[in-house]
Image 1 (spheres, one colour):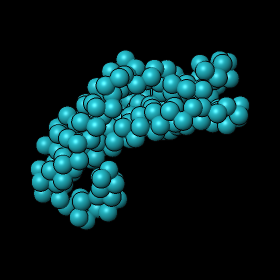
Image 2: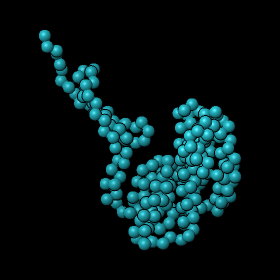
Image 3: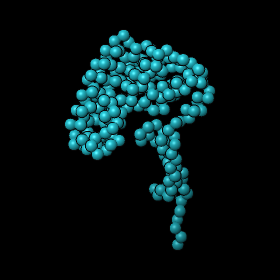
Image 4: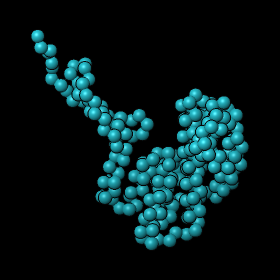
Length: 212
C-alpha cells in the first residue's frame, strides 16, 4: 500500500517580532500536523523606509529615522540631518552643533545602558540590569523635559533642532553626570558575572569604561 498524503498548505509565520520590528518571516509548508519544509526570510527590519522617503519632503523623513533604531533615535536623526546639511551647504550655528553632540552622547549612554544591562542578564546577572535601567530613565527624563518625547524624538531638524535647551538643562545634565560617574565602578560590584565581563570580555568592558 502506498502512503496516503494530503495536500500541502503553505503558511506565513511572521514577520515576527523577536527583538525588533519585523526581522523574520517563516514560509512553512505543512501536511496536516507535519511540517515538511521551512524557508526563513530575513531582512524585514527597514520596513520600506527608503521607499517612503521618496514620496515625502526632506524634513518629513526625520520621523522615519527615529524608527530605524528605537534605542538610538537621536543619533539616527543626527546622521540624517548632517548629511542633508552637507548636501544643501547649510551651516548651522555653533550652539546647534553643541546641543546635537550633547544629545547624541546622552542617547549613546542610554542605549549602552540597556544593551549592557540585558547582556549581563542573558549571562545570569539580573541585578545590574535593574540599576542600569534606572539610570537610563534619568536620561530619558532629560529628553522628555527638552522635547516632550522619551523614545521617538524628531528632535534634530535640517538647519537646527526642534526645541532649544531648557534654561536649567545644564544644571540637570551636570547633576546627572556627577551622579552617574561613580555608578560605573559600582556596577562592577553588583555581580561576579559583571566583574568577569569587565575583566575577561574586552569589548564589553571597554564599552563601559569609555564613558569615564
